[in-house]
Image (cartoon, rainbow, N blue to C red; front, side):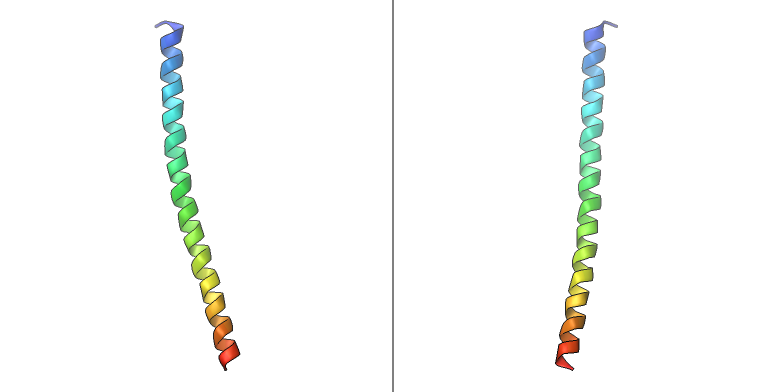
Length: 53
C-alpha cells in the first residue's frame, strides 16, 4: 500500500464520519430546539391564563 492511497482512504473515511456526526448533531439539535419551543410555549400559555384570571 502506498502513502497516497492510504492518505486518500483515511481522508474519505474521516469525511464520512464528519458527515454522520453533523447529521446526528443536526437531529439532536432539532429535538433540543423543539423541546425548548414547547417549553416556552407552555410558559406563554401559563402567563396568558394568569393574566386572564
